[in-house]
Structure formats: structure tokens, C-alpha cells
Image (cartoon, rainbow, N blue to C red; front, side):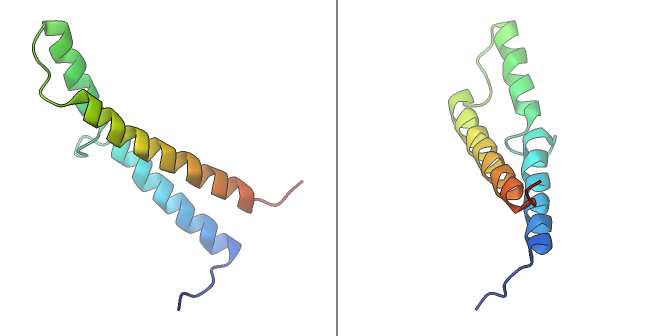
Length: 82
């Protein structure tokens, strides 16, 4: 049985996940990082076939963005009104 988290603990947990997800989009060591987008653009400008499947990369990155948006909505719902 899971313990109930306080709103503060829940917010910290959400912030932690948000940080990880945001980093996954920008990190140069992430398999879905911005560096792959830059590499695809570089190849396209050079007229060379891209080394990555840009459609699949987009799907993976969009799933992360969708989760980020969900978490931001959860975080906003935890904030006191006023």
C-alpha cells in the first residue's frame, strides 16, 4: 500500500520528474536529445540522408512533451487558489 503524499511532497515529486523529462529533450547524452535534431538538420542541409528516423524521433519527443504538459497541469492544480 502506497503512503499518501502531502501536497508539498507531490509537488516535489512532479518537479523532479519535470526536470528529468526536460533534460531528456536537451541532454547531449539522451537518445532523444536536441543534438539529434541538429544532426538531422545538418545532414538535410548537406543533402545527405539523415542518420536517424526523424519521424520516430518526433513521436518519442512529442510523448515527452505531452507528459511534461500533464505534469505542469498537475502542478498547477496543487497550487493554492488566490
